[in-house]
Structures are given as structure tokens and as C-alpha cells.
Length: 606
Image 1 (cartoon, helix red, strand yellow):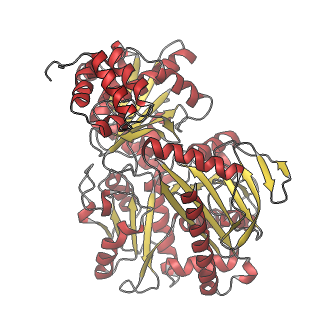
Image 2: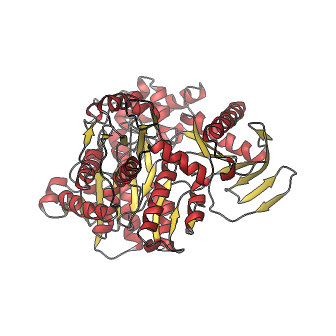
């Protein structure tokens, strides 16, 4: 790039003028000034000045309006060559260096060990090599998975090699424009307090970022390529948590252009599910996700299954499975009846949580190892049907956890993994076993196949089996709505909306009176008559609107990984009133529609 034609001072004045003219957000000035004047950002100065000269105000505003934060899953965002609010070589490097600084502070003496893996996204391999090079320069021994592999395999590797920390380069199910680092602790789980805030503070203080030569570090034995070893060891762990039973099942699987084919295909075939088809249009590993609707490879979206369902009807498949790009989430679809050529429906996350929860617990009961000390773990915004399952089997249900699988894994470590049966969250995350500390799309696929084969052998479909669970535990229906709020204005509106929910919440929702508002930020519950009480629970930016009918409520929280607010809506009918599932479904869907309309209208009014 040629030398800039204007000085840094002139450039900053142009930035201030653009802000004054309303072309950029006020907050960009300080961030751009830092990147133009501090030596650690010197290599980016010509590019920034060129953008200013060409008046690329929107690009500059997007890149600098804030400092890209650590959310529930790490540091995630849109890739751009520079900028404090972008994923680029500098912000990725700061993340790795800050992690190294923190580990060395709390553990001053070596050896230090670090694990890393990456997915199919653009620049993932480049960012993985960068992180590895930085950790080597900081004195770490590095274990590197030398091809596309899943997030749970990285979690397992950390535990397998007794590493101090690890990084997974992935933006999970975000759009192709994005990438990220998920940061992991020595237990194989993502960071929780106090480590998360301490690492963030170190990242903010990073100045110099030393780097070793990657190829030389491999040659010197400072970076170990461990893919084949880790693959084999993880396979053994997966097989240890499988359940015996029928294997007569025809399955179509989609990796959604991500890493999942290796883990899922090898596991299912080893376990006897050999009638397996990989869906061709989604098979190519590609960060563009070219054949997925909207190029968003998220198995939570029913639309990604539409073309696969058409293929399944022709081929007579019994089950469709899909995993997200880093293979830590699983989605599924199945025929409504036993006729594969008939109607198909996808399962939402809460339905999958309940289906697999009941299956796992029942299998342990059948094996004779179910005791009152056994437990399952979920989150505050996951279906309460899991409570009914646990009550029926006489085991514990720990579901008072914040959103994020790291909190589920924290319960495993606090309560002890020996009595852990199953962890799950509504965003399609599932785990059994002790081998890792994150959700695992491959093991979730295996569990779904085992369940589907079992109910097929009984002559019923998965959807019919789910209806039998509704009759047993009570009809439960849930829905998630995402309200996107992009950019600096979006962040401001999110904060205003959450503040309004706290200060002046709606009085009714879906025609039901709101009897109380439970704020997990303050751990205070405010009642409609103005009184309030304290309650125990985890502290987080989460609000529950509890209606006059027990089990019917809505939760609101800002996403920790994307610019949006999430509304989680819940309805339920008692078991004794759930014999007519179709009637319950119609009434509860209408109630969810009303909840959604009211919450969206309230959000628009702020």
C-alpha cells in the first residue's frame, strides 16, 4: 500500500468532522485515534487513512464503534482487516496473548500447555496458526489438530493432554462474514468467573505480540500435530457412552459445510448405523456455506432441512440429522408417521432436549444404575419438561443455570461428574459422559439414532413418541424469537429495552396478566402490586415475565454472541389435561403467537 497522502492529525480531524456530521458514531473517535497513534497498531495506519480519504464512513463505523467483546462463547464478530470491533490478525492475536499472559500470571512456573483446533470458516487455519505461534513464543507447548475438527474434540484434547487452556477458531453458526475464538480453561470448558474477566483485562492491556515461526516450531517439536491420536482417543470415549439396541435405521446426515462429517460418520458407522447417507449439497467443507438457505448453517433453523426432507422422502429415510459448522449443535427431522414418503417435521431445541433426556435416563434405569444421586443439567431458558422427567425417575434436575453450556459443565465439576447423566440447553446442545466439557454434536447424533431405531422397532415414529411423552409429563410448548439490533444504534437500543423491561415492564402478555417480573440482574422479583422479594439464583442479564398461569412465561436476554435480544416463550398444560395433544398444541401455539406479538410490539415501542 502506498504512503498515505494526509497526516494522522488531518485524518483524525476528518474523522471528527464526519462524526459531527452524523456520518459515524461518537465512540469511533477514541478507538480510531488509538489505532492511528499507538505503536502497537502502526501496521494498520495506511489502511485506516485510506478509508478516511475515501470516506468509507460506514466501514469505519462498523470497525471502530466499540471494542469487540468477549461474550458467552468467546470473542466473535465480523472479519475485517483492521478495527477494534472486528475479527482480524490483531484482535485474534490480542486474545491469544492476553490468555497467555493470564496463565503465566497465575501459574508463574512452566511447563505450560495449550491446545488448538479450527473449523472450515474463512481464515480459520490462518488464525489457528497465528494463535499457536503466539503461544509458542510465550513458552507454551502446543497441541495442534491439523485439519478441520469439532469444538468438542478440542475440549477433549485439552483434558486428554492436561493443557492449561485452549482455543477453538470458529464462529459456530454465525454468517460466513464472521469468525471467532472460543477460549477454554484447563477443565475443557469455556471461561467462567473469575477467569473470564481476568483474561479480558489482560487482552485489553496487550501491547507487543511476539510470534514464533510456525513451521520452525513444528520442526523443533514445540508444536505437536495430534489429530490422528486425538481422533482415536475420542472415538473410544464416544463408544463408551453409547447404548445398545436396534440399529435398523436409514439416516441422512448434513454437516452443513462444516467439520462434522468425520466425527459423525465414523461414529455412527462404528456403532452399527451403516445405512447412512451424507447429504451431497452440504458436504463440501466451505466457509461460504453455499447451499444452505441464507448461507447460515444453523441446525436450529427449520429451513435448512427443507431440501434434505425432499431427498429423504424419495430415499425412504427414517431420520435426518444436521450439525453446525463446528459440530457442537445438532438438529433433526423425522416423518410424522411411519411413512417416510409422508409429512416430515423438524424438532425444535426444547423438543430434542426432552426426547433425549427421557431416553438417556430411561436407558440408565433399564441398566439398573439409576440412583437418587444421579442428575441432569439444563438452563433457566430450557424446557421445564426435563423437571417432570427427573421427578418421574426420582433423580435430581439442576436447571437454575444461566445461558451457555459452560455453566452446565461447571455444575458437572462442582457436583461431580460420576453422577452426571445428561446436559442440555434449548439451543440444540447435548452432552453425555465425562470426556469433555462442551456440547457435542456427534454424540447427540448417535443418541438420536439410538432413540429413533428403538421407537422404529416399536412401530411408532419419533413424533408419535414425543406425543406419548407429552401425555406422560404434560404438554410443553416453547418458542424462541430473535430481535436483531445491528451496530452501535442496535446496542444502544438493546440496553434501553432491557432498562425499560426493568423499570416499566408490560402489564399483560398474550391476554394474560403478568403477576411478577424476576430480574436475574438484581435477583429481585417485583409483583404487580408493587411489592418485591429477593430470590436466589445466578446473576446475569436475564428477565422473566411470569404470568398468572403457572408455567406460562417469557424470558428476555441480550445474546452474548450476536447483536440481538432473545425472547424465550414457555407454555404448559398439566399431564391430566394433556390427553388430547392436538387440542393442547392448537391452544398453546395460539398463546405463543400472542406472546410473540406482544413482546415484539413492546420492543418496537421503546
